[in-house]
Length: 150
Image (tube, rainbow, N blue to C red; front, side, top):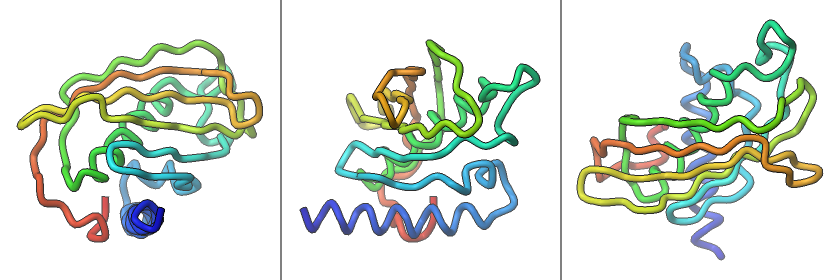
């Protein structure tokens, strides 16, 4: 349990550093880590108006960004960093501004050069699955210090 808390603390500190950068990461500055273990991460976020598309719901690209980022955080729990090779998202229900969501990512297999990750976006209140992601990463670094930033 103490090891999981340390991993969670390291990820949180790394995320805080990354969110200060002038990059797309700023769109996720309200993202909070709920849990982290080797190969898996769960984050929570309340969707804001700035995340919506012209129809008024969470933009599909933002959904993909959340899945991509949290999947990358899962990779960091194994002290690896990678770049996305393939990303597929299935959207099941619209996600509204003000809605609180959980984004969880789990590494299915982490090989020598490629890692495979699945993820889900769920409603915090009723656990309804809103979107599912499947992703593969090319591993670029296998000796990452999480505290250096995401």
